[in-house]
Length: 299
Image (cartoon, rainbow, N blue to C red):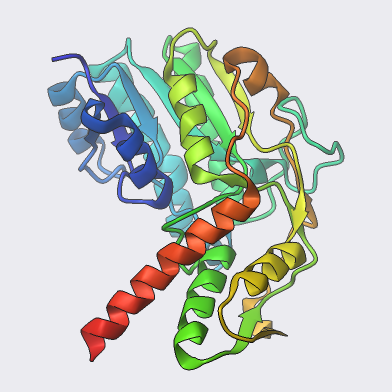
């Protein structure tokens, strides 16, 4: 049997899609990344050829209310992953999934990998710190790739995130005959890719022909959240109005998050393939299926 690819956070949104892409080559890291010795045992047993580190507290909004836990899981957890690999599988490639939010309010748009890191939220700051831990691992001899993933969406996104919340709400409104979609600030513009395209990028970066280093995983396009809501409302099967909910406003939202994927394209040939409309339609269909199942189970 060939050496597997280990995934932390396999039960998360991107983790489930990546595991499906990898099939039998994927093996889940069952250990809590906060437990170094347990991580070492898992890696020693699996002897992976690569490890994709996805496990994180990934909600920027929730990180404002849970900063200490966010830093513990995202930053210290990554230190443990790096140290466990160094000790048990020093030849394995580490693919650390960071975020485009590490750039903060970037002056360079679209933003390249050489732009300064200036995180705003505790989530983004913890990811920036985790990147430093990975770079220290690289200086000690690990083969490290950092993927700064910009916003990605698709089937299975949960309702802690804007598009997951909107698709869930619309699915529920369709059962009740229509109503108001509750939203936060819709003025920000975001670079949005399909999660399946993003997982393809991860697979390409796992290939050792791709040089180690830091890569943006981004569509290279920006779309306002208002346009996203407009598209989803058009897909709804019932009349839906839009209402702003003050409880859904973030303390410090970034006006534009927009990445330049040129480096990734040059290294791997990756380009996004799934159009935004399909991403949203698939996400909405997934939410409809979940809400329908819950409705049947509740009757």
